[in-house]
Image 1 (cartoon, rainbow, N blue to C red):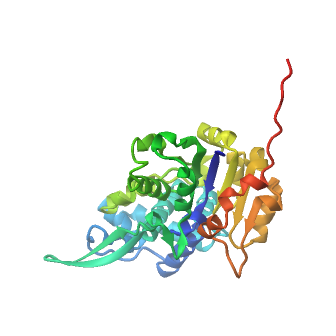
Image 2 (image 1 turned 180 degrees about the vertical axis):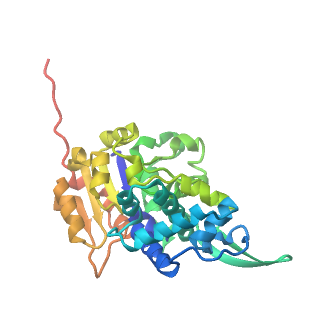
Image 3 (image 1 turned 90 degrees about the horizontal axis):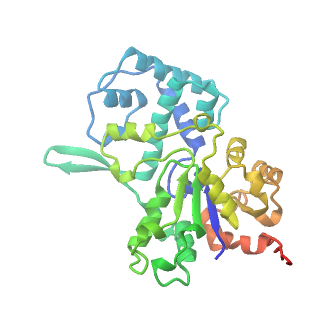
Length: 345
């Protein structure tokens, strides 16, 4: 079996309802326009209603008090966002290079990502109406909007022809993700526990997932504002990760036969961090809408047309649709096998 590494960007989680970095930044701009300064605070909320609060109220809920420094920090965040040339929340934080801006930007990002992964319901109890969020768990479903979930497709390929977990090779499928969410781990674990043939010795059989910029705790841990702080503190923006590459990245990429990039924008910082140019000859990429700038970045890296699968503006190609069209098998035909060296004694 060919060893595959899947490099996952935000676009791959978007299929499950999570926002892109650009969408988070646009939401921040919208809130900044609405609240030019920290508005008067309300009384504390029910445990999970906090995801509907504006940033000033969130800080109050977490710290139990709203100092003048909080107001100044949030006003500073709003002011800088309104006058920034950034197009994403992580780039915005990077160019401002401020711990204060980063702190509030992370809190805002955590809230928006969690909102995307949860569904909101108002429940009537004996104590009155209570607002609660529950994980959508869309990523656990075999089909997403009538198309097979791309993670389910990968799991089918991973277990194909195997009769039990001892026959699975965990290094034949690995993930490197730039996303904070733990959707991949949760989906794979869920698929395994509902497949009795493979659930024995599951931990050793599950594919490895490496988070470049850190990861959230499990979504089920969402119980109140303090869990939101825990989520926000687990985030690392680009400038905090720096150019120190984890050994896991080298191990995954060097041992792979094929490297598949999904929802990945080939941003210069991330390409450099992965040293992806070293592996261009075995890298395959998905271009969701046939974006010319993205194609240019792929070509600059050294990818040929046969190493790309592209959609168009009128007919975009999401990960699940591409998976059904054979994207994750593209390496079998697009990647030229390395010539074997025959040693003669």
